[in-house]
Image (cartoon, rainbow, N blue to C red):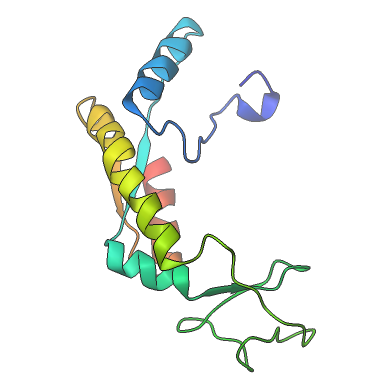
Length: 142
């Protein structure tokens, strides 16, 4: 927060995850003379999220990503550029996602409620195409 690049603001991604963490963050920021001024909630139906996550494939050395439905490689399981095999992250399975979503609904949704009561939450429709979601983010943050 002291770095010059943070003087106009900064983004916390995936934090806080619990109401206690949110309260502690607010206390710390208040002591520094600042505060959370916006919370972005990327709202998406669990079933759509599952389809997106479980269909994701990665080329490990380049980081290129593909999706079996939305951005498939020319040859299934093979990187378009190198011809090398694609991998799926170990946590991109329905079972792991189910566990992560349970934790999200139990621990993190109350954080959204906490900041909603302060009038800070912008609910973004994350089921839209990425360009539309990006435009929503830019609009909310401008």
